[in-house]
Image (cartoon, rainbow, N blue to C red; front, side):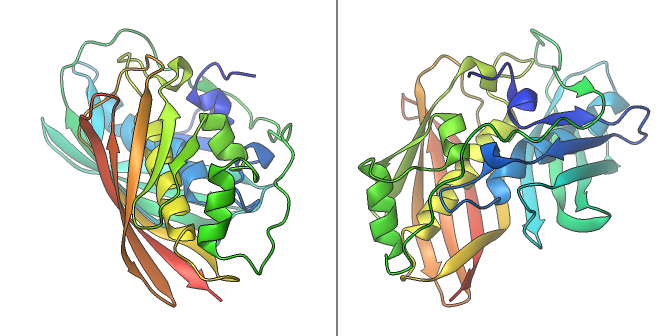
Length: 290
């Protein structure tokens, strides 16, 4: 089923009467990756909205958006968790702002970071579709992926995803994504810019751009790991350079390994639209555990 919008897709709600803004996200099998785990890409929409709303509502006379997100993740949340996110503006003037975001599970931090906000005066063509209310039920309608054979290398796993013999995972399936080139040195992950991914500017929601680039980074790290090595994205920074139209044409992320280490691996990601225009660029660090 096609979601109505990004907030429905990721089961996000605003907590009533919260000041400053607070939101919940109910996790579930819908946001699992190819390993059956929840990783940073699943939280990007929540983080992006928390990073933007306090700055936006501080001055409603001009529209604003996020220019950069920087995230640090700690303990991995579980598939049954309900997360809470809080945010506040730390610095701002008429043009720019910086917002801190904190996402927790039962009061314990899961993810923290900052958003760089910018006022743009861009025409708004709709309204925010996020809903105030109680946390949604966990979106568990999608089966979890089958376990991965621990004897397979990362390159073998990603190659099997690319040729269709292994699922890419529920989150990437939700995005409509596919690995169009499994080359560990330059993995490419493509996603159609679907209408449900849009924001009130009529372009792709920043959280969706973040989710796509982070998901690509995750796959790019995986493609370079030895057999039996687990990983988790623990740091991610993404700069939003242009907003793609949600016209169904693909956006494609290309991942380049910077260093694949025994404990920490780093990859760079660039996102282009179908015409080759650079949309976003990011860097991810992944914790690696043998």
